[in-house]
Every structure is written in C-alpha cells, then in structure tokens.
Length: 299
Image (cartoon, rainbow, N blue to C red; front, side, top):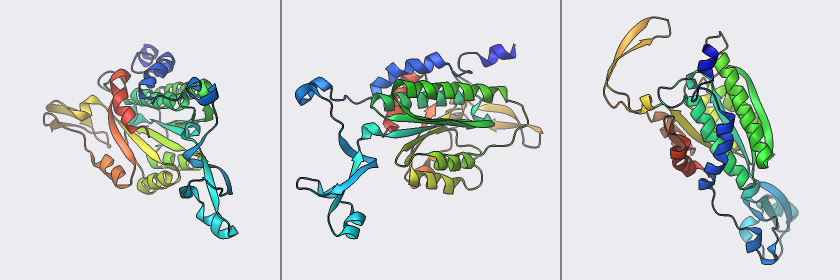
C-alpha cells in the first residue's frame, strides 16, 4: 500500500515524463543558426563572450579591444586578449533540493517533483544549445552528484540521478536522519562547481542553516546562481480557516489563517539584494504552463 502511494503520479519522479520535457523545453530555445545558413554550409567553433577562458594570445589588428586582458598585458608589456568559450559551451550545475520540507504538496505534485521538472526543462535547454549539464541532488541521504556531460546522454544521466535521489528521499521519510541545511549544500556546490559555470537551484529555501547568506553569496561569486523557489499552491493562496499543526516540541495546536494568505517574499528580496536571479514556481502548475515563467529565469 505504501509503495503504491510513493509511486503515484505527482509523488514519484517519473523518468519518462522528464525525458519527454525535451520537446517542451524547445519553446525556451532561441533559434540557432543552422549549418545550411552558414557560408559553405560548415559549422565553425566560435569564440564568444561566455565566462570560461579558452585561450590568451597576442592582440592582432581587428581584435575587439574590450577583450584585452589587463593583467597579462601589464605583466608582459605587450597587449594580449582573452578569448572565451561561446555560450553554447556553458556548463550548468542543477541543484535539486529533496530535503524533507520539499516532500509535500496539496495539489498536482510534491514540491520536490516540481523542482525536478523545472530543472529538467532548464537542463534540456542547455544541452539543446550545445552546453553541458551536471547535477547535485541533496537531502536526507548521501548527495547524488552527476559530473558535467553534454548532449542527450548528459541529460539522461541527470534525469537518472534525479529519479534515484528522489526515490531514496521518499524512502527515508520518517527515519531519524541528521538534518541537512541549505547552507551545507551550497558550500558543497561551491567545492564541486566547475569554474565559469552557472548554477540553478530549485528549493523551498527553508531550513537555511547557519551561514546561509555567506554560503549563497560565495557560491554566486564563483558561479552565477539563479534560484527557483518551489511553492505549493496552499502557500501562495491559502483559503481562510482554522488549521491544525504540530509544533517542534510535538504539541498539537490550531492556527487561524486569513483568506488569500500570500507567501512571504522576504527570501526573494534578499536574493535580489545579493544580485541573484530568482522567481517563485507554483508546484500546482504543470510543466506546460510553468515553462513560460521558468524560461524568463534562464540566462
């Protein structure tokens, strides 16, 4: 009986559903120049204005002066330019929060499932644009890490990691396990995040832990961070009434909530003040609807 509940739609992470999001993610992909549209019909590896350095060489006539590397130029006494990988070569680390606060929901899906869907949409867009994807899934279990890979095989590995980590998280519900704070996971992400990559974190931003602000800002300084705060429909617009709850010490109490109670935006305001892109994603919305909002966060 319990196994049937944990395998129900919206409770378990469906591998086939995440694989199918590849086609939905194409709504977010900007049209790319095809091989036939290039002179000679050849695709050349361009150097663009990403973040990861490709090479440093002498300045030659025709180079963009904005690419001059001041440090190397000053050290050698001759002008040098820093060439960087094109954005298509970008590496993206997807961070999936599967801690206990994410394993609940009142509508279509658990917050954790909505997080997996949102990250899968972004991941598919990355590989469709020629980038690479990596995964860090964390919760009340040993973190699941998938190293950066490109193309379809990269996303298949990430989706497999998402499904496996989520299954372990569900199985651990009710077990006495050490508390995993968000700050510790951010510190881990900073250690494993490839230089010049981008991080997308899908989380409810609860149980942040000591040092959360410094950990978030340090990670953002190393690798630009974008946050998808996954919210349940109840949090976004709770109907008025009396609601029972259990406090931290185990006592049962009742609270009265006003109609149309809206979620606190304090966490997102803090992220904005730290120059971190963020938005709230309603877990009740299917990917077909949420894709528009998620696309607005993609950078």
